[in-house]
Image (cartoon, rainbow, N blue to C red; front, side):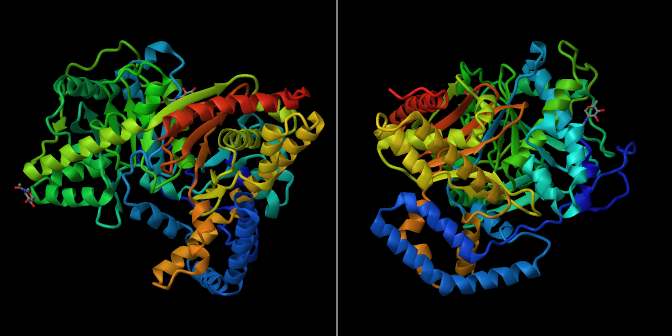
Length: 639
Ligand SMILES: *[C@@H]1O[C@H](CO)[C@@H](O)[C@H](O)[C@H]1NC(C)=O
Ligand SMILES: *[C@@H]1O[C@H](CO)[C@@H](O)[C@H](O)[C@H]1NC(C)=O
Ligand SMILES: CC(=O)N[C@H]1CO[C@H](CO)[C@@H](O)[C@@H]1O
């Protein structure tokens, strides 16, 4: 892709090339579009539109009144202050600080509650899916990515929703012909737009550090070592030399073989369970660890380039693989690392990442590149020998644990086992149609999947509930995410029509309803991606009030406000040939976490919940809802 086409709206700055990358010219683009703060009036209008389907008439009138008062009073003032603050801080976005704060102040364990996983597609050539071969190739491609990042050779992140179309000449001409002022929107319309890359500075050599009440993010400047976990033991070895050359593949594999042989049994107390703890508890125990003389070792973990988990697990099906990547059995993970690359015994690969520093889009870009590079230019061939002359410079980290630390580990272990047992994870696939079919019907694939979830919940529970779809705002400088609210009056009416009034409505009528839902969803999606949702704006206003120590405005105390933020259906989607989908835990104890994917000819999801029976029923109903939608789109009356 010719990124220069999109460069007009960007400042371009060149730096002196680094030592290992003198070939091509460096790309450093800075995103100049700033995340807009919507008008308060618009935010409240959108908020009320999202509240309407969730409330009865009386509640809705009340919430409307509260919103009106907020608009004229406390809200007006907070909004003005937020705008002033934003004008003084043009280097960032208004959401960046409050969002970091939200993640880092959360005291729940990061695992299950925050860390998502992404599962990589197997290497197309079977022999490369061997644990050692795949680990070595992915390490090397990851380090190459790090080197490009460091030397500013990484092309600006451009999100290609549709690679075929956006790489075509037609597309390039289309963008070229647009006036500069709208070319960015033009690119957005076809899903090929440059992304803010500021999150990448915390992708490598980074870790979240537990602290009382609010954690911190740590990034090392120049570490050269990798952290490898095997059977609950920690190993470090340098993968880069002093001029940033990567260790030879045969040497890397020799180190991994050494580690696998050495770590042949589980430790009595696996330290990593502590990273599954409540953050305040973990912060306290970490302090004890430091005092007990483990500072050097902890520093090695925190500053490692990333964490490789060489699992001794052979998942027997896809659900077990998802579980392994989402939480594993706890002892072979360091959930605080910015990301961990997990390789199972049978060569499946995936990423589990800590969420405070960055979002799915940034991790997906990394995964895409590393997948492509490791499959197209594998550094290590299957059956190649490890170098017998390699000097193993691997260090096993040994920790000093006294009684109180040991019992803290024991408690963490039991709590973690308890919690992961309560969560169930199920996959779902529907093969009657996918993206191609929906697009031919001139509808939005994402909207159809979301509508299906709405109909499903209505079918199962006879009501509509707050729902969440994550949308990246990485098109803006220091953008993070915005929420799309898939529940609307339109989806509610459509769900009622399909579930309760099946016989009474004509197929044409139902089809029109679906079409209206699709159009509305597309609009919400576009607004959210352009920073015009309502969730982040309200969140920032609330954060401002709290940080000033002001009394909480009535608006945020409204039970309807609290309810809409208790997201029963939490969804997120990632589309890429390099990934086999991802997943995450439910965000509330009585909800579902749905990582979904609308592929060309099928659609599916990996869903999680603490309510096992309800989850199974949900997926049964989802199948039913999708069949209904299919019948309607095919022009068949519902039975
Ligand atoms: C273990 O070490 C920590 C830190 O030095 C200390 O606070 C704690 O009291 C010790 N516990 C025991 C049982 O010795
Ligand atoms: C992928 O690997 C090849 C061969 O090692 C290398 O030449 C190329 O630059 C790599 N690409 C990226 C994006 O790192
Ligand atoms: C780990 C993983 O991605 N598991 C599954 C999630 O769901 C999709 C769709 O059913 C499967 O293809 C994945 O294998």
